[in-house]
Image (cartoon, rainbow, N blue to C red; front, side, top):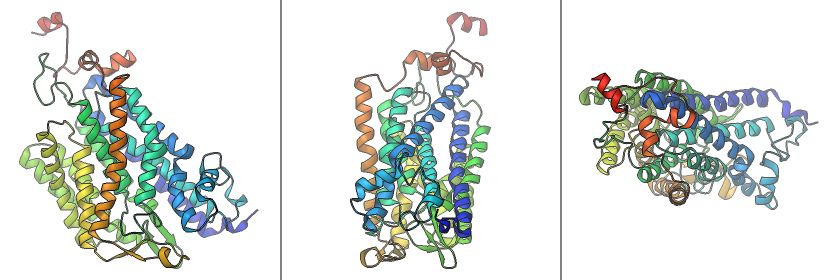
Length: 458
């Protein structure tokens, strides 16, 4: 038994990090509520089923072995013998580090074991949120099999790989000068890129961008649910930020990239970006007479500021937050001009995510980042500095890791089982087609009904 693992500091922060990890599930719930409000009533059940299943499959992949990919950066930095083999031995779900009680793990081998194990759960929920976000870009038209296979592989390999490259104090790009905090690279830019590829390959929903002979068009079942979903995400974001920090008792608080910060400052910065984004989003919504921007403006403000929360000031976050809805709106116009129907994930995650990540490189050019306490030389804390170039390299690496497998998998399913549901299923509703249910009734606006039904209605 190693009583050192049971120190009060370890147990206290293990609990704090656990709250952050579980809070990511509120993001999944929020996304589900948003999509529930935006799909046709006859697709609500299937939308929830797909999102839930996609999140489960992605989380399972990370739980099984994906977390080990992220841990690999530490095994290299601390010169663990045969690091690639050892990290998988330790951190796959049957490994010694992942499946042993903290008190039985030598702190010289697995320091702060409870916290490291809780970080595994954090990564599991993070992958769940990633898959749920990608699903939001393809609601009402993607087949379940391709979605679930993609979600599993995202959790197993691709999202942890971006985390290994860009998110962590000892990751390869962080040690060159790439900076992240809120998971802008592995969550927002990664999801936005995958969503862009999928929305291109799937095409728009019937009647979304041009009239359909049957009169079908996407009709929100209840837009008030969008506001409720956004509130769930609001509640989650401050707690999720806890998982992006290193708290060293009696010393300092650092962001995930080992940049010095403070928990109070992070919270102020989050609300500065969120509320300013909300103000600008409300103005855009009022001007455009589009209520969605009232609800989504604060999210755009958070996304564009995600790399800034640990190193920025409240005024900087207000400026970034105000830019968020503007960049999101410009991205949505560009996506529409390209003939793609993707009004949420690409405009909110990809556009603001990329712009915010690169802007931080200019605003905080030269800020120390990377490294880890106790290491020296090329791994010493603050040995690297943030630059626009390395922020751009982080963006390019993330886009590549997402776009290449998304394209390959899309082409594979197009040539085999098919990627998109049939036109008949889309016309009549996926609840009935997939589950034999129509629990939410027919949405009369834009519904497909038999000719006799039309005559009677007339």
